Image (cartoon, chains in turn cyan, red):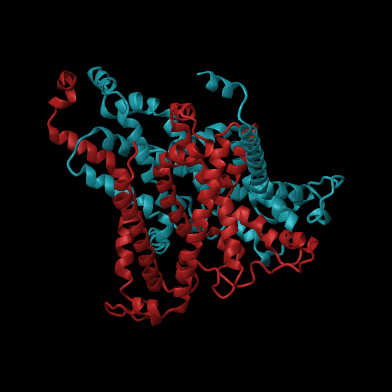
Length: 289
Length: 300
């Protein structure tokens, strides 16, 4: 008894070294964390640097370098960013609205109605999680060509209107809604659609926000499919526009490309910085089943 | 269940309820059938016909025979394999480290999280444009840094030995923050009591990480693994900006090769055969996820 008290008062000599080592490890870990963060944010910081300073400073760091907006001006002159931005917004919005509507209906049916073949239908829907539309560009292009929907907003959106991911998320959320709420609404004489709108949708708001943020950032950034189905400024989104703008053949110089890049990611970046917490939480919510 | 018996819906004929379910599902199912299931089937079907030389050939395995002889295809498959084998574990390991840091007691974790996550929300095309400058041969940033150390630098994207690794580096940078989110969610779901109990028993930090954190992260790791492999096969946007698959297909990936065949060489039948290969890879992945792995990993 006496001995054990002694050790607690005067720690054995090894303890001090051990504590020191632990502190050193923590220090190293913190340094690595910040170093990694610096590397991860660097390309974006660099884009800001190059875009806001005269061309000769693109490869030279100097705190006294003058600020300029000339690159933004020439980027704006050289590519129809307004049209691209408008197209991206329309396409992203169109896809989101349709997804929310279709996924709500399907998610409700799968969560709350027992019907024959439910398991098979659910499995068929989940297939889209693996076989994403990008992979089927060859066939989907031919489908859209036969619908005369090439180079239209509808064409860019069609393959994405029903989202297996959205259906899955909403089904999981709707399953947690207490049955009593639905029963009460039914007794009050609500129709099926009214029940969905008044009981289920309000209770699933966080899920809707999570899905909306994931969907918007996905379609704002989507490239391959829009590249395939768009031909002109009439429907070309920002990503495809940026690919043409940044191509070496177009002979645009670096600072201007950086300025164009910042213009194209600007709205999304502002949205992200404003709602950073919701963004991260939404992606997290979307990640856990 | 008395409340269920009271439910007016139950008094309705079951058939009406069934019809309702199908009506609610119909809009989503139409789009899924039209753009996922039917194209999958017709891809397989079309891969057995030839569109070359303009004369429709009868049902044949010509495309698949060509597949076996096509050296570019072999190289593309090899590239895709190594691309996945390198980028997936690397970005997952970094993601785990990031999540542990962001979830720890480090000061300024919000800033760390912001830095790690930002590449995820930027379009691949835009970041590829920035990285193109980093990699460019003469004025590029990497070569300028190497110049300080007296090196002549490399032609990162033009050298057949370096172009694919260069793509990998950028991919790891782009993807790690995204996977971090999943690990972060899983870490926050672990009960703090487990760590308290371990602390009472005098377990070291490292031991807690190995015996509590990592095992509890297993389901997340598998989820992320499958998604990471899927991403490695479906994300080829950066190729359009950085290498276009070159030089001489040294950095070409399967989906980009499909695109080239369909929209540059206009050989849709061969593109269909290539798509079938990609679909088969995905089927294997799906089986892995829903079959073997999900049954083996049960911690909840």
